[in-house]
Length: 344
Ligand SMILES: Nc1ncnc2c1ncn2[C@@H]1O[C@H](COP(=O)(O)OP(=O)(O)OP(=O)(O)O)[C@@H](O)[C@H]1O
Ligand SMILES: [Mg+2]
Image 1: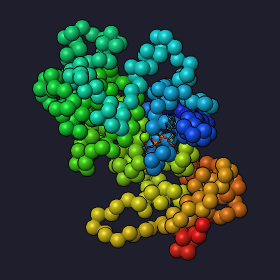
Image 2 (image 1 turned 60 degrees about the vertical axis):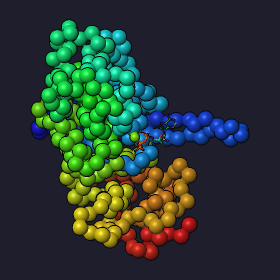
Image 3 (image 1 turned 45 degrees about the vertical axis):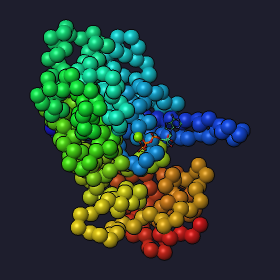
Image 4 (image 1 turned 60 degrees about the horizontal axis):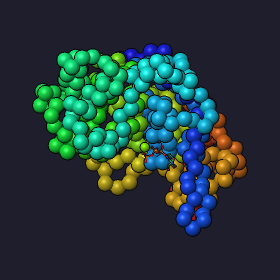
Protein backbone atom coordinates (compact mmCIF):
# COMPACT_ATOMS: atom_id res chain seq x y z
CA UNK A 1 0.00 0.00 0.00
CA UNK A 2 1.31 3.45 -0.84
CA UNK A 3 1.85 5.38 2.39
CA UNK A 4 -0.05 8.62 2.71
CA UNK A 5 1.35 11.76 4.30
CA UNK A 6 -1.33 11.67 7.00
CA UNK A 7 0.53 11.22 10.32
CA UNK A 8 -0.58 8.62 12.83
CA UNK A 9 2.30 9.11 15.29
CA UNK A 10 4.45 12.11 16.12
CA UNK A 11 7.21 12.18 18.72
CA UNK A 12 8.61 15.62 19.57
CA UNK A 13 11.84 15.80 21.57
CA UNK A 14 10.84 12.82 23.70
CA UNK A 15 13.13 12.03 26.63
CA UNK A 16 12.90 9.08 29.00
CA UNK A 17 15.29 8.49 31.87
CA UNK A 18 15.42 5.52 34.23
CA UNK A 19 16.99 5.53 37.65
CA UNK A 20 18.48 2.27 38.78
CA UNK A 21 18.42 1.36 42.46
CA UNK A 22 21.58 1.61 44.51
CA UNK A 23 23.49 -1.56 45.38
CA UNK A 24 23.23 -3.47 48.67
CA UNK A 25 26.56 -2.13 49.84
CA UNK A 26 25.65 1.51 49.65
CA UNK A 27 26.55 2.17 46.00
CA UNK A 28 24.56 5.04 44.53
CA UNK A 29 21.95 4.28 41.86
CA UNK A 30 22.70 5.46 38.36
CA UNK A 31 20.72 7.32 35.73
CA UNK A 32 20.16 5.84 32.27
CA UNK A 33 18.96 8.09 29.48
CA UNK A 34 16.96 5.57 27.43
CA UNK A 35 15.69 8.20 24.95
CA UNK A 36 17.25 11.60 24.38
CA UNK A 37 15.05 14.22 22.69
CA UNK A 38 13.82 11.89 19.96
CA UNK A 39 11.61 13.41 17.25
CA UNK A 40 10.00 11.38 14.48
CA UNK A 41 6.80 10.94 12.51
CA UNK A 42 5.01 7.79 11.36
CA UNK A 43 2.64 8.09 8.39
CA UNK A 44 -0.65 6.28 8.25
CA UNK A 45 -0.40 3.06 6.21
CA UNK A 46 3.37 2.56 6.41
CA UNK A 47 5.68 0.16 8.20
CA UNK A 48 8.15 2.36 10.04
CA UNK A 49 11.29 0.61 11.29
CA UNK A 50 13.03 1.61 14.51
CA UNK A 51 16.50 0.08 14.29
CA UNK A 52 19.32 -0.04 16.81
CA UNK A 53 21.51 -2.35 18.83
CA UNK A 54 20.55 -3.79 22.20
CA UNK A 55 19.95 -1.10 24.82
CA UNK A 56 19.43 1.69 22.29
CA UNK A 57 15.94 2.52 23.60
CA UNK A 58 13.71 0.79 21.02
CA UNK A 59 11.40 -0.98 23.49
CA UNK A 60 11.25 2.16 25.63
CA UNK A 61 9.99 4.10 22.60
CA UNK A 62 7.35 1.44 21.90
CA UNK A 63 6.19 1.39 25.53
CA UNK A 64 5.82 5.17 25.56
CA UNK A 65 3.79 5.12 22.35
CA UNK A 66 1.25 2.59 23.65
CA UNK A 67 1.23 4.40 27.00
CA UNK A 68 2.66 1.64 29.13
CA UNK A 69 5.01 4.32 30.43
CA UNK A 70 5.17 8.12 30.51
CA UNK A 71 7.90 10.26 28.98
CA UNK A 72 9.88 12.65 31.20
CA UNK A 73 9.75 15.39 28.58
CA UNK A 74 8.54 15.97 25.04
CA UNK A 75 5.27 15.30 23.31
CA UNK A 76 3.71 12.12 21.90
CA UNK A 77 0.74 12.45 19.57
CA UNK A 78 -1.24 9.54 18.18
CA UNK A 79 -3.75 10.47 15.46
CA UNK A 80 -3.30 14.12 16.46
CA UNK A 81 -4.10 13.63 20.17
CA UNK A 82 -1.57 14.06 22.98
CA UNK A 83 -1.28 10.56 24.44
CA UNK A 84 -0.75 11.58 28.12
CA UNK A 85 -3.99 13.61 28.04
CA UNK A 86 -6.21 10.67 27.08
CA UNK A 87 -8.80 9.78 29.73
CA UNK A 88 -12.04 7.86 30.10
CA UNK A 89 -13.80 6.88 26.90
CA UNK A 90 -11.04 8.26 24.65
CA UNK A 91 -8.38 6.31 26.54
CA UNK A 92 -10.44 3.14 26.13
CA UNK A 93 -10.77 3.81 22.41
CA UNK A 94 -6.99 4.39 22.22
CA UNK A 95 -6.39 1.04 23.95
CA UNK A 96 -8.51 -0.61 21.25
CA UNK A 97 -6.89 1.12 18.32
CA UNK A 98 -3.24 0.94 19.41
CA UNK A 99 -1.71 -2.44 20.23
CA UNK A 100 1.74 -3.82 20.98
CA UNK A 101 3.23 -7.24 20.15
CA UNK A 102 6.10 -8.06 22.50
CA UNK A 103 9.52 -9.51 21.83
CA UNK A 104 9.15 -12.76 23.75
CA UNK A 105 6.07 -14.89 23.01
CA UNK A 106 7.09 -17.24 25.85
CA UNK A 107 6.56 -14.47 28.39
CA UNK A 108 3.74 -12.52 26.79
CA UNK A 109 1.21 -15.40 26.82
CA UNK A 110 -0.33 -16.70 30.03
CA UNK A 111 0.51 -20.45 30.14
CA UNK A 112 -2.73 -21.18 32.02
CA UNK A 113 -5.09 -19.73 29.45
CA UNK A 114 -6.24 -21.55 26.34
CA UNK A 115 -5.63 -19.92 22.97
CA UNK A 116 -9.33 -19.05 22.69
CA UNK A 117 -9.32 -17.36 26.12
CA UNK A 118 -6.06 -15.54 25.30
CA UNK A 119 -7.26 -14.13 22.00
CA UNK A 120 -10.81 -13.35 23.18
CA UNK A 121 -9.71 -11.62 26.40
CA UNK A 122 -9.40 -8.14 24.83
CA UNK A 123 -13.00 -8.52 23.53
CA UNK A 124 -14.16 -9.40 27.04
CA UNK A 125 -12.24 -6.46 28.57
CA UNK A 126 -13.76 -4.06 26.03
CA UNK A 127 -17.19 -5.73 26.31
CA UNK A 128 -17.40 -6.31 22.58
CA UNK A 129 -19.80 -8.80 20.99
CA UNK A 130 -21.78 -11.76 22.32
CA UNK A 131 -20.47 -15.34 22.55
CA UNK A 132 -21.03 -16.20 18.89
CA UNK A 133 -19.56 -12.90 17.69
CA UNK A 134 -16.48 -13.35 19.86
CA UNK A 135 -16.00 -16.87 18.52
CA UNK A 136 -16.16 -15.52 14.99
CA UNK A 137 -13.77 -12.63 15.78
CA UNK A 138 -11.23 -15.02 17.36
CA UNK A 139 -11.48 -17.36 14.36
CA UNK A 140 -10.91 -14.45 11.97
CA UNK A 141 -7.94 -13.15 13.99
CA UNK A 142 -6.30 -16.61 14.09
CA UNK A 143 -6.88 -17.04 10.35
CA UNK A 144 -5.35 -13.62 9.63
CA UNK A 145 -2.10 -14.79 11.25
CA UNK A 146 -2.11 -18.11 9.40
CA UNK A 147 -3.40 -20.39 12.19
CA UNK A 148 -5.85 -22.51 10.22
CA UNK A 149 -8.26 -24.10 10.76
CA UNK A 150 -8.64 -21.76 13.76
CA UNK A 151 -10.94 -24.08 15.72
CA UNK A 152 -8.06 -26.56 16.01
CA UNK A 153 -6.23 -24.03 18.16
CA UNK A 154 -9.07 -22.86 20.42
CA UNK A 155 -8.53 -25.40 23.17
CA UNK A 156 -4.77 -25.65 23.01
CA UNK A 157 -2.40 -24.04 25.52
CA UNK A 158 0.78 -22.06 24.80
CA UNK A 159 3.08 -24.95 25.82
CA UNK A 160 1.49 -27.06 23.05
CA UNK A 161 2.59 -24.60 20.36
CA UNK A 162 5.89 -23.88 18.63
CA UNK A 163 7.62 -20.53 19.13
CA UNK A 164 6.37 -19.28 15.75
CA UNK A 165 2.79 -20.33 16.54
CA UNK A 166 2.95 -18.59 19.92
CA UNK A 167 4.05 -15.36 18.29
CA UNK A 168 1.17 -15.71 15.82
CA UNK A 169 -1.23 -16.10 18.76
CA UNK A 170 0.23 -12.93 20.31
CA UNK A 171 -0.34 -11.17 16.99
CA UNK A 172 -3.91 -12.52 16.76
CA UNK A 173 -4.59 -11.15 20.24
CA UNK A 174 -3.35 -7.75 19.08
CA UNK A 175 -5.45 -7.95 15.88
CA UNK A 176 -8.75 -9.12 17.39
CA UNK A 177 -9.85 -5.58 18.29
CA UNK A 178 -9.20 -4.31 14.75
CA UNK A 179 -6.35 -1.91 15.62
CA UNK A 180 -5.18 0.96 13.41
CA UNK A 181 -1.65 1.05 14.75
CA UNK A 182 0.51 -1.82 16.03
CA UNK A 183 3.93 -1.60 17.69
CA UNK A 184 5.72 -4.87 16.87
CA UNK A 185 8.73 -5.14 19.20
CA UNK A 186 11.29 -7.53 17.65
CA UNK A 187 8.53 -10.08 16.97
CA UNK A 188 10.99 -12.51 15.38
CA UNK A 189 14.09 -12.17 17.55
CA UNK A 190 13.39 -15.56 19.20
CA UNK A 191 12.55 -17.36 15.94
CA UNK A 192 14.62 -18.99 13.22
CA UNK A 193 14.97 -17.48 9.76
CA UNK A 194 12.25 -19.37 7.88
CA UNK A 195 9.65 -18.78 10.60
CA UNK A 196 10.72 -15.13 10.79
CA UNK A 197 10.03 -14.80 7.07
CA UNK A 198 6.47 -16.07 7.64
CA UNK A 199 5.93 -13.55 10.42
CA UNK A 200 7.24 -10.77 8.16
CA UNK A 201 4.69 -11.77 5.54
CA UNK A 202 1.92 -11.53 8.13
CA UNK A 203 3.09 -8.01 8.98
CA UNK A 204 3.01 -7.10 5.27
CA UNK A 205 -0.50 -8.58 5.05
CA UNK A 206 -1.54 -6.44 8.03
CA UNK A 207 -0.33 -3.30 6.24
CA UNK A 208 -1.52 -4.14 2.74
CA UNK A 209 -4.83 -5.94 3.35
CA UNK A 210 -5.95 -4.75 6.78
CA UNK A 211 -4.70 -1.16 6.54
CA UNK A 212 -2.73 -1.34 9.79
CA UNK A 213 0.15 1.08 10.39
CA UNK A 214 3.16 -0.58 12.05
CA UNK A 215 6.06 0.60 14.15
CA UNK A 216 8.44 -2.30 13.62
CA UNK A 217 11.22 -2.49 16.20
CA UNK A 218 14.32 -4.47 15.23
CA UNK A 219 18.08 -4.72 15.68
CA UNK A 220 18.40 -5.93 12.07
CA UNK A 221 18.78 -3.54 9.16
CA UNK A 222 18.20 -6.50 6.84
CA UNK A 223 14.76 -7.15 8.36
CA UNK A 224 14.00 -3.44 8.23
CA UNK A 225 15.00 -3.29 4.57
CA UNK A 226 12.71 -6.19 3.73
CA UNK A 227 9.68 -4.84 5.55
CA UNK A 228 9.82 -1.13 6.09
CA UNK A 229 8.83 1.89 4.07
CA UNK A 230 10.96 4.18 6.23
CA UNK A 231 13.62 3.58 8.84
CA UNK A 232 14.96 5.46 11.88
CA UNK A 233 18.32 4.38 13.30
CA UNK A 234 18.87 5.09 17.01
CA UNK A 235 21.99 4.76 19.10
CA UNK A 236 21.96 4.98 22.91
CA UNK A 237 18.66 6.85 22.81
CA UNK A 238 19.70 9.30 20.09
CA UNK A 239 18.22 9.49 16.61
CA UNK A 240 21.10 9.12 14.14
CA UNK A 241 19.50 8.79 10.73
CA UNK A 242 16.01 8.62 9.28
CA UNK A 243 14.70 8.24 5.74
CA UNK A 244 13.14 6.01 3.11
CA UNK A 245 14.29 2.42 3.73
CA UNK A 246 15.96 2.05 0.31
CA UNK A 247 17.73 5.40 0.61
CA UNK A 248 19.08 4.70 4.13
CA UNK A 249 20.33 1.23 3.18
CA UNK A 250 21.73 2.10 -0.26
CA UNK A 251 23.17 5.48 0.77
CA UNK A 252 23.75 5.36 4.53
CA UNK A 253 25.21 8.66 5.70
CA UNK A 254 25.77 8.05 9.39
CA UNK A 255 28.89 6.10 10.44
CA UNK A 256 26.75 4.10 12.89
CA UNK A 257 24.31 3.03 10.15
CA UNK A 258 27.34 2.14 8.02
CA UNK A 259 28.76 0.06 10.88
CA UNK A 260 25.42 -1.76 11.24
CA UNK A 261 25.49 -2.56 7.53
CA UNK A 262 29.08 -3.80 7.79
CA UNK A 263 27.95 -6.13 10.57
CA UNK A 264 25.38 -7.89 8.37
CA UNK A 265 26.49 -11.36 7.34
CA UNK A 266 26.75 -11.77 3.59
CA UNK A 267 25.75 -15.03 2.04
CA UNK A 268 28.68 -16.86 0.48
CA UNK A 269 31.37 -14.68 2.06
CA UNK A 270 33.34 -16.16 4.92
CA UNK A 271 35.74 -13.35 5.77
CA UNK A 272 34.75 -9.97 7.12
CA UNK A 273 34.10 -7.71 4.13
CA UNK A 274 33.73 -4.16 5.35
CA UNK A 275 32.42 -1.65 2.93
CA UNK A 276 32.45 1.36 5.19
CA UNK A 277 34.78 0.50 8.08
CA UNK A 278 33.51 3.24 10.34
CA UNK A 279 33.76 1.45 13.69
CA UNK A 280 36.82 1.83 15.91
CA UNK A 281 38.63 -1.36 16.96
CA UNK A 282 38.67 -0.14 20.55
CA UNK A 283 36.46 2.48 22.15
CA UNK A 284 37.74 5.95 22.98
CA UNK A 285 36.96 7.49 26.33
CA UNK A 286 33.38 8.79 26.04
CA UNK A 287 32.71 12.47 25.70
CA UNK A 288 31.04 12.94 29.13
CA UNK A 289 27.52 13.80 28.01
CA UNK A 290 28.54 16.47 25.51
CA UNK A 291 29.25 15.92 21.83
CA UNK A 292 28.03 13.09 19.64
CA UNK A 293 26.67 9.97 21.38
CA UNK A 294 28.56 7.76 18.90
CA UNK A 295 31.90 9.59 19.37
CA UNK A 296 33.54 6.89 21.50
CA UNK A 297 33.09 4.23 18.79
CA UNK A 298 33.23 6.28 15.61
CA UNK A 299 36.12 5.88 13.18
CA UNK A 300 35.13 9.05 11.36
CA UNK A 301 34.83 11.37 14.37
CA UNK A 302 37.20 14.31 14.74
CA UNK A 303 38.21 14.88 18.32
CA UNK A 304 37.54 18.59 18.75
CA UNK A 305 34.26 18.89 16.95
CA UNK A 306 32.58 15.55 17.66
CA UNK A 307 33.55 15.30 21.32
CA UNK A 308 32.30 18.78 22.14
CA UNK A 309 29.29 19.47 19.90
CA UNK A 310 26.26 17.23 19.48
CA UNK A 311 25.36 17.16 15.77
CA UNK A 312 21.85 18.25 14.91
CA UNK A 313 19.65 16.28 12.52
CA UNK A 314 20.13 17.74 9.03
CA UNK A 315 18.21 16.93 5.85
CA UNK A 316 20.74 15.83 3.22
CA UNK A 317 18.30 14.46 0.62
CA UNK A 318 14.50 14.72 0.51
CA UNK A 319 13.25 13.04 3.70
CA UNK A 320 16.74 11.72 4.55
CA UNK A 321 17.97 13.31 7.78
CA UNK A 322 21.26 12.56 9.49
CA UNK A 323 22.85 13.63 12.78
CA UNK A 324 26.55 13.63 11.91
CA UNK A 325 29.00 16.51 11.43
CA UNK A 326 30.66 14.55 8.62
CA UNK A 327 27.60 13.09 6.92
CA UNK A 328 28.24 14.80 3.60
CA UNK A 329 32.01 15.18 3.86
CA UNK A 330 34.49 13.00 1.98
CA UNK A 331 35.62 11.56 5.34
CA UNK A 332 32.32 9.78 5.96
CA UNK A 333 32.65 6.10 5.25
CA UNK A 334 36.32 6.24 4.35
CA UNK A 335 38.06 5.97 7.71
CA UNK A 336 41.54 4.56 7.43
CA UNK A 337 42.61 1.31 9.04
CA UNK A 338 44.84 3.20 11.52
CA UNK A 339 41.89 5.32 12.58
CA UNK A 340 39.90 2.16 13.21
CA UNK A 341 42.30 0.96 15.88
CA UNK A 342 42.34 3.96 18.14
CA UNK A 343 44.55 3.33 21.16
CA UNK A 344 42.77 4.07 24.43
N1 LIG B 1 12.68 -0.36 33.80
C1 LIG B 1 13.95 0.02 33.59
N2 LIG B 1 14.74 0.40 34.63
C2 LIG B 1 16.01 0.81 34.44
N3 LIG B 1 16.60 0.87 33.23
C3 LIG B 1 15.87 0.51 32.15
C4 LIG B 1 14.51 0.06 32.28
N4 LIG B 1 14.03 -0.24 31.03
C5 LIG B 1 15.05 0.00 30.19
N5 LIG B 1 16.13 0.45 30.85
C6 LIG B 1 17.42 0.86 30.24
O1 LIG B 1 17.14 1.76 29.19
C7 LIG B 1 17.97 1.52 28.07
C8 LIG B 1 17.12 1.21 26.84
O2 LIG B 1 16.44 -0.02 27.07
P1 LIG B 1 15.46 -0.66 26.00
O3 LIG B 1 14.90 -1.91 26.61
O4 LIG B 1 14.51 0.37 25.54
O5 LIG B 1 16.48 -1.03 24.81
P2 LIG B 1 16.24 -1.90 23.50
O6 LIG B 1 16.78 -1.10 22.37
O7 LIG B 1 14.82 -2.32 23.44
O8 LIG B 1 17.19 -3.15 23.76
P3 LIG B 1 16.99 -4.70 23.30
O9 LIG B 1 17.34 -4.74 21.82
O10 LIG B 1 17.98 -5.43 24.13
O11 LIG B 1 15.57 -5.09 23.58
C9 LIG B 1 18.90 0.36 28.46
O12 LIG B 1 20.12 0.91 28.92
C10 LIG B 1 18.15 -0.31 29.59
O13 LIG B 1 19.05 -0.92 30.50
MG1 LIG C 1 13.88 -4.21 23.41
